[in-house]
Amino acid sequence: MSVDPHFQRVALIGFGLIGGSIARAAKRQGLAGEIVTTARSEKTRARVLELGIVDRVVATNAEAVKDADLVILCIPVGACGPVAQEIAAHLKPGAVISDVGSVKGAIVRDMAPHLPETVHFVPAHPVAGTEHSGPDSGFAELFINRWCILTPPEGTDAEATAHLRAFWAAMGARVEVMTPDHHDLVLAITSHLPHLIAYTIVGTADELAQVTESEVIKFSAGGFRDFTRIAASDPTMWRDVFLANKDAVLEMLGTFTEDLAKLTRAIRRGDGEALFDHFTRTRAIRRGIVEIGQDSAAADFGRQHGQLDKKP
Ligand code: NAP
Image (cartoon, rainbow, N blue to C red; front, top):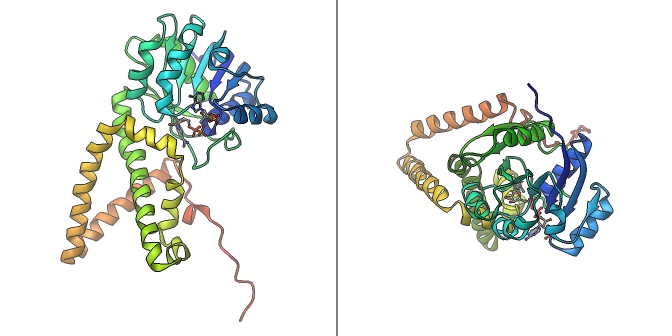
């Protein structure tokens, strides 16, 4: 039986890339009777009002959640605990309380103790994003064909989970349910470690740029450019991710370091076969990702190339 994805009143705390995309998608799909939002700064709240996407913009988190049937915290992971404490007394009994944080164990640990038993806590993580932030960065299509992982703590009302699942599915997401710990381990390798590597390599290249002047930028299409997109991701968000998912990231970093040592040894020994085998395996992984529709098959991420219009 299909579950109704609608909520009468939806409160979004935080209106950046993710909050702004939820507002746009929910509006487009008619998923909320009313959308109320707030953000930390007056500047963002004024901009949200100007954009005219939501029904009401209010000044405080407490005001935003009043009478809301669905509350989604779309703020950095580190801010979720204090905000849960702040809104707890103002939540409507029976409401679904969720978030979009990229780490789940810390969210459950920091938010759950503050929430009253009368509400249903269903943490969520839409595995979708860009390197942009702020109220203008969101778009309604962000979640289409992307995963949204729900991590309801044990004993959560199944109907509340199904309702939130239907809401995300109606915005185009593919929804999966798992435990917070499993989520954190999977995301440590698929998202957190790649970001750490990008932050490292771009920082290292920046130091080299002092030596080579602007050659790092000039020849960046040789691979470096793709790391710079990831390394341009929001510093607050990613600081919080690494602090909140420390154990899983350190575990994956250990495995990564061992694998890097193996490749280093292969290069040092001139072991072409080991390098070739490794690169063949990774190429198959890329093809698999394209096959299941998680990225475009277009060469070079679909970047446009110039035209050769005149013969010399
Ligand atoms: P963002 O664009 O920087 O927006 C963050 C929003 O949170 C802003 O509206 C900000 O208000 C507000 N905010 C910050 N602290 C607050 C507080 N204490 N109380 C109320 N509002 C507060 O960030 P985002 O990219 O949407 O990320 C939000 C969450 O989504 C993070 O937890 C992140 O882990 C998760 N996430 C991000 C991505 C991604 O690719 N970006 C993907 C999946 C999940 P001001 O503008 O007034 O400061």
